[in-house]
Image 1 (spheres, rainbow, N blue to C red):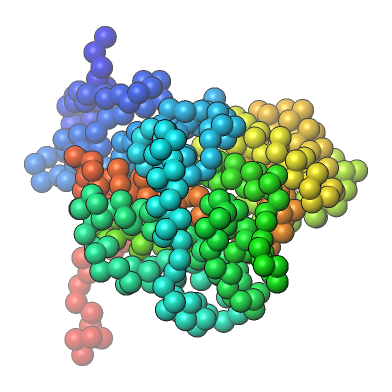
Image 2: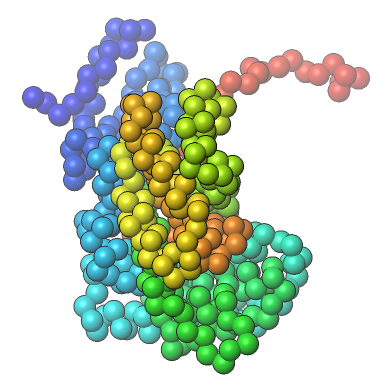
Length: 434
């Protein structure tokens, strides 16, 4: 059997044989070169065929060794490691090292990596003045988008994206400064003084300190909440070629610096279809109000009146493995923060939905947003901070993807095609001529 696909153009009767290439998993990554379709022409003046794919639902824009996602089987792996194992056994910073370097760090490399990131936590004082220019009602995510982009003006060498040492330095800076920017954005929106980084605390513990420290001389995060948030950061570190990652790669393909490329990722994440889904879950659970009203809401979903938020996914057609981990962690959070009736509603809603053929037949299973919003709220994060919390760990994935793109032998600037459906050449406008 030949690894090719044969296409017959019924317009001309010509037959074309196009080679099929494979990724690591042949059943999941078989592809043909899109440019091979350009050979299929009516005549020599014909441009050739394009593939039409709004939203890039079946188009591979790159090859990558970072994240494997099989939505049919509910599998997520970073560099070959199952997400379940990484969440259980490794810190977020070690996972960020894995995404960037390709291997998990040994103890010495782990310590060195953490020290470098700790060294770059501080922000230039002028950034505080820049943030002070935002109105106190500004959305924290809007502040984050602007300040991340503004950071590129503070480091002249950042433009040297082809230099490996410069790239490494900017990766340290961005992973280190994102929690500081995020916490400062929150403090600004609350009218609170900025809390500076504390080198005695872990990556996540330091973020919690900058968020919630008040008058105490030393903030000490609850160890359970610190660990849970570290796991959540691991779950959100990367997720293949989603909207924000594609935005980072697209902007970065022009050789723009990583600060503005990451700002583009933040901007994409700002949209409610990408980074705001967990907020919609909270609204739904509040609307349901109690477990006894769940059957009524389920019927409304079936009638098309409302949507079942937090169920279903663009890629996953099985149970999102990240949601399963968060479901197990939720009780630990509430053992510290106190019970939340929304969790009881969520658990019962999931149980009923997964026993209903309507949802099972449509592959509507809980995704990561179904539980993350409930956990964030219990930990004291306002809803406006939810997409910001997403951006902090995803920065490590964005930068790994950006670095991989620049080192790719097939690297080229992003330039999608279009199918033009407007007017053909028009005659001269008579009114303009007059």
